Amino acid sequence: MQIWVDADATPSPVKVILFRAAQRTGVPVTLVANQPLAVPPSPLIRTVRVGAGFDVADDYIAAHATAGDLVITADIPLAAKLVASACQVLSPRGELFTAETVRQRLSMRDFLETLRASGVETGGPPAYSQADRQAFANALDRLLAKAMRA
Image 1 (cartoon, one colour):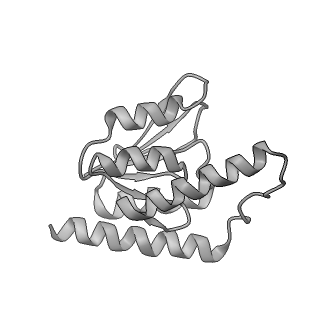
Image 2 (tube, rainbow, N blue to C red):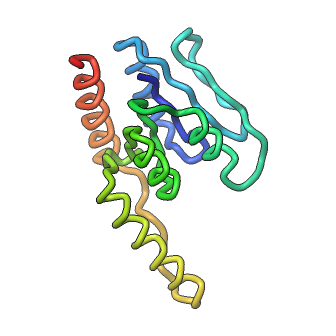
């Protein structure tokens, strides 16, 4: 198992949790972004810098993540691709995407995109909170514990 992170939009507290998890479990973490990232020195943590452009980091992760890997992303289309490839996908807010939930989220995303295109103000997601951080940490711990038992 390897952990892949869609790092451009991943909140800093999530990265810190992942760095600690890598050290604790020995599971390697790869952060993919189109900008330089500061990470602690560790053979378990690496970064991949991709070129600028729409979905370049997403495409890299989709091309390199394999069945059984864990991917951290809030990008619903990327999550859908990865779930179809038998990857586990977790949002920075602790939501584990499944085939069913990712379909529902894609439908809602498309609906909101249609509303925005017609001029309706839909707002954005709420600010990342302590509850989100805790939900992510708990979900990550459950997934890693399950992987370690397998």
